[in-house]
Every structure is written in structure tokens, then in C-alpha cells.
Image 1 (spheres, helix red, strand yellow):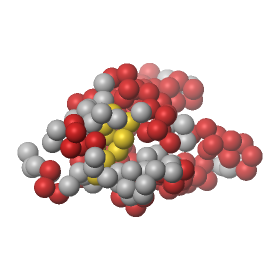
Image 2 (cartoon, rainbow, N blue to C red):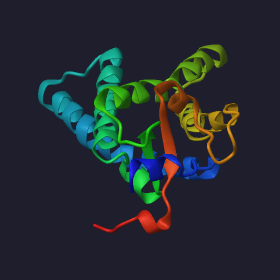
Image 3 (cartoon, rainbow, N blue to C red):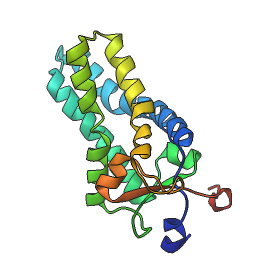
Image 4 (cartoon, rainbow, N blue to C red):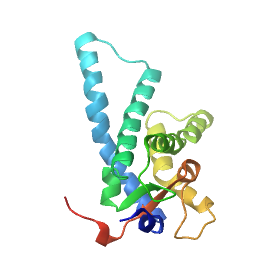
Length: 178
């Protein structure tokens, strides 16, 4: 599809975003297992060393950033976005450049800040923290499309508006098997 054709496609509705995010979280479990758990288990078993929590967070943040930026700049779609026929583009309809993809990742990860505040205020422990993170990422962040006063078919989430990007829903005819 041409950039002009892509830029006029409708944005994905709330439930399509939620199901895509759920699938994305499942894919990310594999990414994290491969790039994080295996090396950290090796460090722990071979050398008896574990990374401090702040370094662990930065490492995970960087790994996930590389994953998203690479996919968004390569094809405009992660594996989950391909399944749900969603593509991220810039406002002109082109695939994102590295800089814009990086900022979209940064803005897209801002949902962690309210989670930290809630954890401090509510004194959440162990699994409660994971449940809260999962719920906020899966449901509340996609709800930010309703803050956009554009027409229902053009609504974009807060990170997309901040980064100057758009999520569009591809038609079934545009999907090719490779």
C-alpha cells in the first residue's frame, strides 16, 4: 500500500488494541526468556552473581526498546501487530525512522509511572504489583484513545499523539502470507 492509502485507513478500535496488547505480552515473554532469563540464570549459576534491581530494570527496558524499535522501523509491525492487522506509521503514512520509533517507545512506556505511584500509595506486594502492571498496560493505556476528540475512526492513543505516529487497521486484502 502507498503512504497515502495507509494514512487514510481507520485506527484500530479499543478491543482490537487490547487483544493485540495481550498477544504482544505473550510474545514478549519469549523475548524476555531468551534475552534476560537465560543470561541471568547463567550468571547466577556459574558465578553466583545477580544484577541489582535498577540494572535489571534498565536492561529489560533496553531489550524491549530494541525489540520494538527494530520491528517498527523494519516493517511497522511487531509480530502481534501482524496478527491483528495493525501497523504503526508516521503522520504522512511512512514507516517510522529510528528516532521517531525510539520516542514512540519512550512515550508508550510512560504507563509505568502511574503504576509506580499506585504501588507506593496502595502498598502493593509481590503478585499484586504484577497484576496491576498487567491491567494498566492491557486496559487503561488503550483507553487513552478516548481522550482523542477526533472522529471515532481516527482516534489515537496518548503515546501516538505525543510521538506523531498513528496506528492503522489494515484491511484483510492487504495481508499477504510469506
